[in-house]
Length: 314
Image (cartoon, rainbow, N blue to C red; front, top):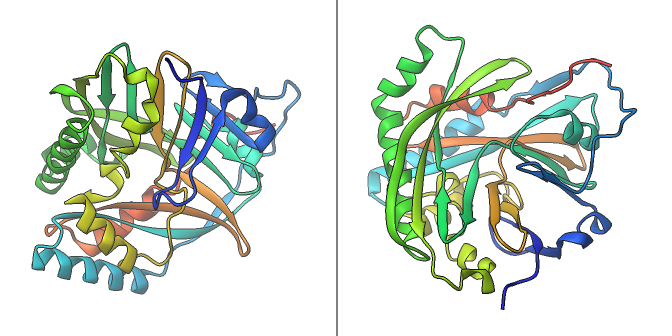
C-alpha cells in the first residue's frame, strides 16, 4: 500500500520531527515552495520596500576557538571532515513571510514565527525506482579573478568534495543498490543581493526497491543527518559538532520536503534565517579539514550570509 502524501521537516538532532499530511501543512503554519510545488502563492498586490540587510559578524575570536578545537580532533584522527557552523546576527527590513515570497531558490520553507529557509541544496530525490543525491561542497565569490578555475583547482575543496561524495555513496547504499556517481563536481552559479557565488555539486544515483513508496520516510531517515552538513566519519563527527558549536542546530541543517504519492523531494535546510528573542540570526558554516585555514573558513562563513532576491524594490 502506497503511503498518503505528506510534508516532513526533521531537525538535525532528530528530536522534534514534523510530519504532516500535505493538505494540513498550511493550517499548522508551515508553508513550502519545493521545485514548483507550493501551498502559498505570492500575493498579487505584494509590494516591498528596497531591501536592507545589515549583519553583525560572528565573533572571530570565538570562531577561532571552535576552529582550533576542530583541528585538534582532526589531528587525533577522530574526524577528517567536519562542517562547522555559527550564527550571524542580522537586521533586516523584511519579515520572514516577505523573505519567503521575495527569494528565489529551488527549495523554500517558512515556519511561522520561527524561521525561513531558501535552500539551493537537494538532499535526496526519489523518482520512479531511482534515488538521487546532490551533495554540494565548495564555495567561492564569483567576482574573484578566475573564480571558477580557483574553485575547481583547489586541492582542499577537491578533497572535501571527494569525501562527501564517498560518504553519500555509502549512505545511499543503505537504501538502494547499483550506486553510481553520474556527474562529478560540476559548477553552479547562485545570485545573491551582493553578487554571485559559485558552488560545486555532484550527482549520485541508485536503484530503490520496488516497494519503497510504502514507507519512504523510513528509507530517508536511515540517511540522516545529511552528510554534507555533518562530516565524516558521520557519527563521531556529529558528537564533536555538539561540543564545539555555540548552540544546538535544531531545524537548521535538518531536512525538509514532501512525498506527493509518487515521488519524494527533499532539501537540506541551509541558507536559514531564524527568529530569536534577541532578533534575527542567519546560520551558516563550512567544511573544515586538516588543510583548512581559519581566516579562509571564517570568510566563507560570512560569504554564505546572503539573500537571493527575486524582487529588489516596490
